[in-house]
Length: 366
Image (spheres, rainbow, N blue to C red):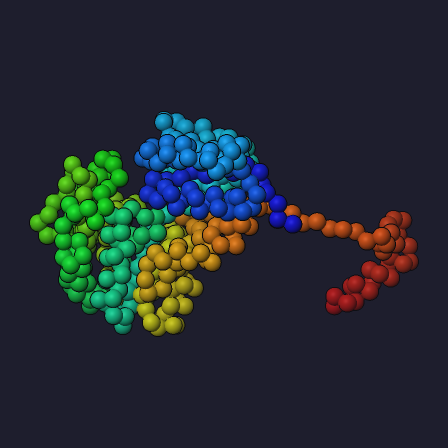
């Protein structure tokens, strides 16, 4: 029998604050729970609006909103909820899980990571580039399931670069246009600058796909970049970019891509581009990830009948669809004993009847 867990705490990031608050709430309420929602410090105006209008629809004992004013998230994660759901960085996710462990509170963690794409040389390269670059510019790359890096066959490296340039010239010609998303805050903007400078200083090839357009610090507009020829000691190899930077790696055979990806933390998403069914299966079977979109990127997240969640360092637990209802419920097993039970014949002291039953069971097993 599915029953409500009780009160759930939902910790929401800044990049999709409406979606990532109301979607979990839908499953929490469908399962019969009450909820407390803690918003990001970068969503103050939205937090205040939601607090203002929420009471029109839900009493505060059913749904309560909290804005981040400094230290709220730390205290929030220490409350003995019946379930905590957190979406955000792996570093903060570890802190949330540690706090929840003190109360034996179960957690759902959606943490992101470095999600790879792999392009089969037999797949139409122009189509792959168009789809990958669309996702990479969407929300200025500030999406946990975005393509963090791409494996391109070594024979197609130059063509990939040229196609990426053409895409940006056509679809994102002016980074200062309102259609091109800003980076969320100065700290994130500086992190992207430092990531590029770290790569350059250590020998990487950095390509500004916007040509001579430089980053606009005042509006926090950051051009799309390709980063090639990276090494293991570079920041971009080891940290989720969460911005319009795309690391490009080359490979000769599928095993090279598989070996590299499996040598990293398990990603939240995997994006193989190939029409070869055997190759699709090879990548899906050999590389563990939270979810998969084949021949595109990101869109498995929007399929509401599919469960969504990470694995390993990219998170734990699932929601969306039926799995969302199950996650926010206690599936409570209930057994009703009949009026007559043969177990009374197997109670001690044991005699010949119990021996005959035991021998029969052993005989049936063999």
